[in-house]
Every structure is written in C-alpha cells, then in structure tokens.
Image (cartoon, rainbow, N blue to C red; front, top):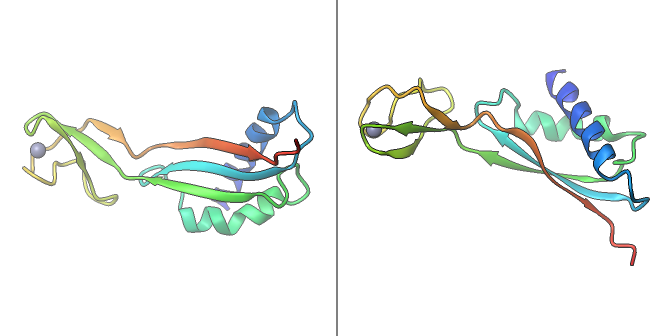
Length: 116
Ligand SMILES: [Zn+2]
C-alpha cells in the first residue's frame, strides 16, 4: 500500500529525530496536503502497521490536512481550490498554475513522553 510506504519514511525520520532520548514517542503530527496523493484515512489505517515493532509503537498519529491553494494574479490573493479541480481560480475562473499549498507531506511534530 502506498500510504504504508510513506509512513515508513515518516517512522524513520522520527526515530532519527528522537534518537537522543529514550522516552517513548506519544504522538506524531503530519501535515498532509489535499494534493499530496496521500489519503488521511488510509494513513490512519496504516499507522498501527507502520509503527509496530518500532520506537513509535503506541504513538498517536495527528494529521493536519492542508487545503490546496493557488495564487491568483487576477484576484491578487490566495484562493482555495477543490482537490479534484484544475488549477483555476474558484472566484474569477482565471487559470492560475501557481500552487502554493496542497502538496505538503511532512512531519509537523513528534511528542515524546515527559519523563521528568
Ligand atoms: Zn481569481
């Protein structure tokens, strides 16, 4: 499954980021754009499989969905676009190829348990 492969890279990145502590990882935040190609529901479904047997086992997955936005030079502002819509301004209909948000797939945070 596509999402499982993506999550494996997330797990590896987080494991590296928390390598200096032994505290368990409680939660991982992901920023996922609506045009990233990753489906949040599928990510959540694959999460337990991706973290099984890793340092992240038991961690919660928080997904922040980032709406796709284009910069419309006619409106002079950012406009949210439908994920299946062409890169056309929803307000004025002018085609604007300047996607400024929507392709995000990145780790937003990793929370480790407070052992103090
Ligand atoms: Zn416009």
